[in-house]
Image 1 (cartoon, rainbow, N blue to C red):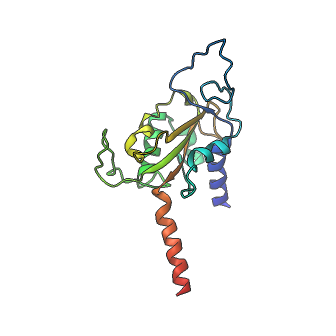
Image 2: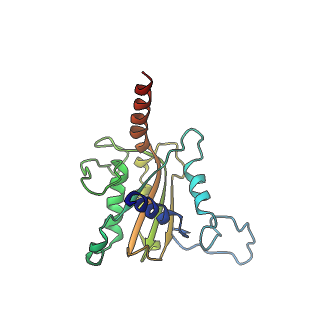
Length: 201
């Protein structure tokens, strides 16, 4: 029952209506009657959020395993005493992403990425990330840390997509979720395969 609640909360944080975050407002030509499906012209909630997620993260037929991480992870009784800031939430979520942890406790903060492409310690790389922000000032949150090229392979041309909603999510004044197509699924899948092979021996 508790696991179902955790899974439902995580899925809802991604699949509820949201809009694409832009770095700056788009100025429109009143005489431009281009396609309404153009990302630069589309306004309002994404009409097919799940389809957009799958299209962005699972474009390669050989890589379709996704992982999901959420922050903040706060007990309901402590929400009233919690101060929410996008900078802090995204810092924790990014660290969860690069160390491949689903929990914000016992994070290994020794795994860091330099401002360049060099790596201090091995971190989890992603083919693509789908970041969803919900709550106050979500559209103004600074997500540049998730656009760091060192998080992605060199051939990834547009690996980050950010969706936002100013609506509060449950009792959370701010809430962030990242769905990732990354190396995080390799270790648990390898363990499952090893157990399966051992059963056949």
